[in-house]
Length: 107
Image 1 (tube, helix red, strand yellow):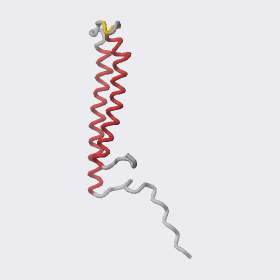
Image 2: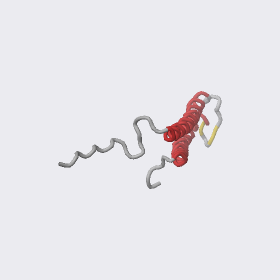
Image 3: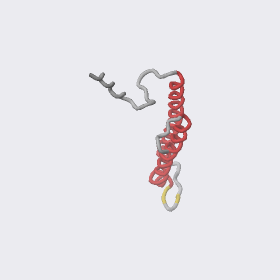
Image 4: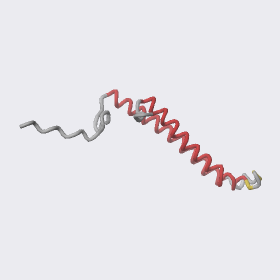
């Protein structure tokens, strides 16, 4: 009678749920550190644009393209900044993933 086969490992090769060897832990910690720095910087930019635009809306009372600048900033400018934040995050995370060896297959 053949021996029963081992059950498949629940995680893909290279992914660990427990303690990793020293080198892998350092790589994961470095990747996570870079990810947190990028996220913190972009969240700070998001906060400044969102809070600053609304807080200083009355002081920004001049015409821009026929509309009050505070209105334009809230209606158009902030949305463009938010789209730029998403694009920068995707671009920088791809570079961070490559740097630390976490790029997806086929990239």
